[in-house]
Length: 275
Image (spheres, helix red, strand yellow):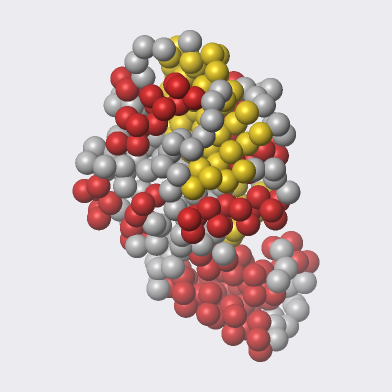
């Protein structure tokens, strides 16, 4: 079987199984099985698969049909143009989180002391360390396994990030120029209603934001105020329906509060500056 036929058959199998983006997914799996990039598939469509390659490709298709996320099968995900290692210990990176990076780079292009709270796979900390090249970047998470993944991503991408296991900012020093975070913000009761791919494969600790989804924001916002230098920025991701519920949590001491929508028009990022 050659590459062209393998993609066609794999895509048909996934489509019949109700998998979205079936052809793209089949291409990604085949590229992984061949240890090549997708360009290779277009360049050599008549190249015959070896038995081992076909076995790997078939296993990936089978796992996807059983509901395993693409990123867990590939053991990686792309974020801000870079490839990050992903495991079941961390939240799968979403493209919407890139808005946090974009706002942070716009608001604090010369930040020299940066912190990423609830870092997960480290996508925000590593990306900002590479884009800003600040003197110091710290990343925190309460999960030791998540920090292990984040450390491996920083090492693989050559980012100078220090990792600290703690609850939010309990072990960080002040003052900081920029704090970013993508905290858990799903209401506890809502988690069971999520798509199975999220509910059954993302770690609950990275999803559960308490009864109303705001528990982490209630704790993070005052901590950030005490850790930021005057004029420093806090940039956080929020849920699509939290554009009205999170801003009131910013009280005295904050200025320049703004909500930024994602490409779908949903509230996605809140930014505020320490007065």
